[in-house]
Image (cartoon, rainbow over the protein chains, first blue to last red):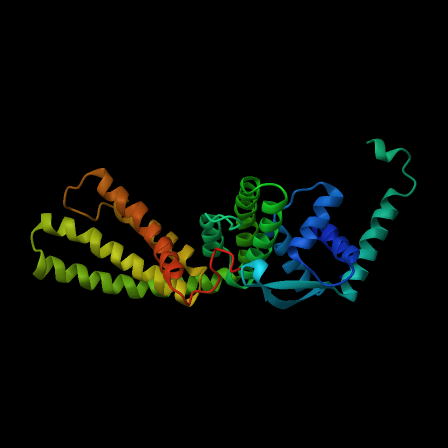
Length: 109
Length: 196
């Protein structure tokens, strides 16, 4: 992660979802994890577009899985959180902690 | 629509618009989730969900494609196809007006046929090279027709719906013909229905 470059909110959430899933996950699993935990109904397109961006930054990697009948014979694209992605998450989390430290009653804002 | 098969038209829109490298995985994900929802909730609710996901995903993916500059390649292909087909159509128009239908009334009848055939072939060629190029080709056709109508190139008096037909049916035939051919071809990858 370059200095001064922060993760966008969806990038942050998707990296956290990949970290929670702890392994290779495809777009719909990531979308479902976010929906269950945040009640945010995001589109599969937004998930893939963000994953694509994260892959270009080197935070995640992807590979193609085997086609299955329940997917209409289409292959899965599985994503994995990379070390650079974990570092980016740590920096982002630390930034949020630093910015919220010492704020009294900020949750009520 | 068969039981547990996602809305075919939504699949078609998805396949037509989403750039090829992402389309297969995303559509597979949607179909997988659709099947689960159709079994656990109801096929109607699952279809509604599928439509909502397909429609909401298109802008994100198109924007992502534009950002990654994939659009430059698609645009170049569309432009190339347009130039080649434009030249062929011009030659066909010239032949028709000189030899086959020298009278303006006959030409007015034949011109839309030539136009639709040209745009359909153009759509198929562009889709064959790169799926995303058809959207750009449709846009180029629409802009060109709009400009030609605005500058009143056609000297033969024609009703407004005649020109409106060129403006709408041209881009539509660019987009729809390759999809129709892809669906009817047994070799076409990724049918909309579940292969169970």
